[in-house]
Image (tube, rainbow, N blue to C red):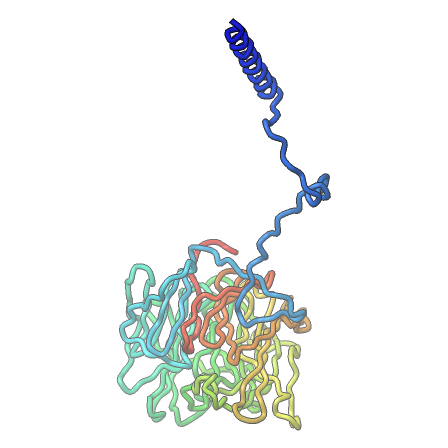
Length: 448
């Protein structure tokens, strides 16, 4: 009997214990507490009440381009806009590459011949003019090719230019052996005609330089000429104007800038007749380490920069402003400054150029910097600002190319092509080609 009583007591205690545990679990669940209390050590107690630190953000991507601002601050990486295509040329052909990247594509260009003195031209409508055994106009996207002119086997083209509205072309030719006639053609793309001819034995040996800008068709009525001094390379001294409204082969060139001081034209501003020229040019030692191609190193380079306006009737040069003064008889040849590839901004309000110096001893390597100067007005109201240093470079050969967009300039530097945003100095490498290339320009949509 006693055993039965003990067993009943144990069963009752077990039931009561189970009900208590069940009731405690229900209360915990209702209050949201946990069943176990975590152990807290001393270091965790010390951190109690402190704000959680902000995660470290990824740093702004930096450009690997060989360019540095005056304060040596890191250059941010440029994100190139989509929908643009860069066009450039090498010795073997003309190539294009989209801004999104990828492999370059060689254009089909029948008759094309690389010519150091004659660059292909990108028209305002996005087509490409190129030369060789003749002159062709090609649509780079559709592949449609139109031949503008054909040259005789003993003729070479010495220069080519296009009016700012893209409707009128001009070019000059001469005999390949230098003995014969110098011919200049001009007119619409559909019907150019010979407008001037002379013997190559009587210099100045004219080659075309550009069209005078003007309102409407007036902008295509005056052709600017320079003298190549019987050279097939890009030499241009002096400046003359030729009236295209006169009957063909009747007008004579009128002198604007004499060449007896080795001065010559460099660039004409878009939408105006502000002329950048040099009053003194000279030779620079060709680097012996092959950092500069021979055809580029053998050129003469401006040692000074001057700005004037071509205006009046008869046409003449107006007041000149010295942007960069001439240098003469310096004891150390490495102190000379030389200029290459100056360009105007698309709005014509600034001049950008590469200034370089050359070592006085072999290998005659070059050190380069990019400068910009503002300009405003024209004629007697012309104003030129002091050049401002934009970037220095560790590259041994730096050349400015065409505009990728209104704010982005393309630059060649030691076997690669870069893009530089002029508003914030950000840059990006477009392509590394490991050889010398000349940038023609870019086609795309929108302004950046």
